[in-house]
Image 1 (cartoon, rainbow, N blue to C red):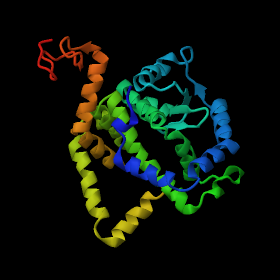
Image 2 (image 1 turned 90 degrees about the horizontal axis):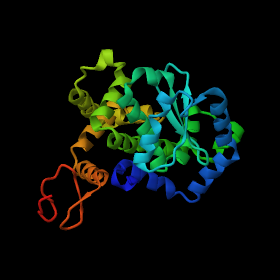
Image 3 (image 1 turned 135 degrees about the vertical axis):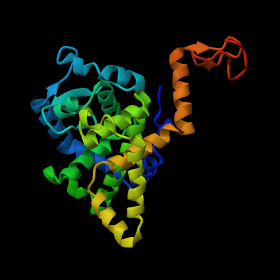
Amino acid sequence: MIKPAEFIHPHDAAALRQLENIPGFPALVKKILQLGLEQMRYGVNMASNIRLSPTQLPKLYRHLPPICQKLGIPEPEFYLEMNPMPNAYTYGDSRIFITITSGLVDMLDDEELDAVIAHECGHILCRHVLYHSVAVEILRGSDQLGLLGKLSLPIQLAILHWYRMSELSCDRCASIVTSPEVVARMMARLAGGPKVITSELNMQEWARQADQYEEIRNDGLWNKSLQLYVTLGLDHPFNAVRVREILNWAQSVQYQSLMQNLHKAISGKKCHNCNRDVSADWIYCKYCGAKL
């Protein structure tokens, strides 16, 4: 089973610690959803969108179960929304659901769609969904039932900062289920358009735009202030930043070790000499040297 601690992005972990160190914060957020937001959004989603199942648009539905099985999470409810904008979101606490848009399905191939769904399932695996749901309401600028007024502006901004950082963890989750290359490809579609336009995109050159952005952002106090102002209301980090992060992580020891361990676990093969899990493609055991 994949554990969040094996891939969580450090910026996500740090921002979440800051949130949860606010006295009474987790209980307050949960109470806000229980007072009506969750039921309201769940009802609207149920009435407006198509719930996918083995008998309702099964070709789309069948993307979800293998991803949930690989991540070791319960299957959330899964919906299709008619919306030409490519998007996906996860919402709820007691009744979690994932919704994808028709624009997303049109834009992506099967592997790229798997990456998006795995990203959304990553929010469930990492237990992001409770705080995410409140962050969504903040971003919408909505305050149904007067509930969000219970959160001060600094706390709202802290939630949104964590929200952006949590996306980096879920990009990692998507790359475990698919691959970093597929995740980068998916990001290319969302940033630049369908495959007919972006199929020859140079990913490394695009990722370098994130370095150029950092140079702009760090060029004096005024530029830092301008970029901070721009990012305060964003729900995701910039696309080039996300691609750079995932391509860099693909080269890390953490990612390589995690994938090697997953490969061993999937193979189910053990060394006859030391009885440790080994990869199916090993000729000799890397632990004791015995021929396999």
